[in-house]
Length: 100
Image (cartoon, rainbow, N blue to C red; front, side, top):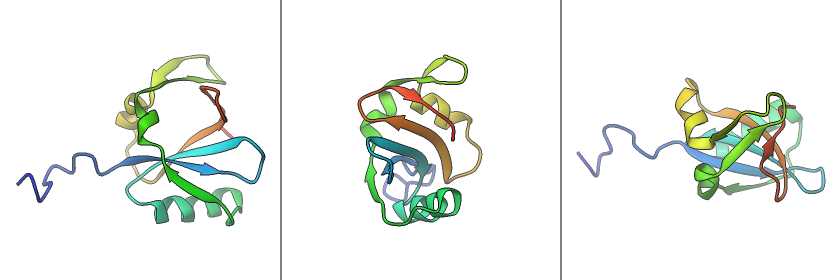
């Protein structure tokens, strides 16, 4: 059962997309980077982008630019019901998420 991952633990990852705007990244929850590429292209019409696994940031506290509420990204992932999902944009080195 462990090898088959019947419960799907760890399937959904956090990905960061280096956008065409200098120092800005878009964040997504998804199972595969191809899902991120497709969703980002549909949403923002940017196709020449670099996508990286950003799971290490899952344990960081991010603040919402809209509400100021702070939360861990893994907490936000727990509330998402459909994947892939857009999380928000953040400037490099800053822990504030903007919804574009």
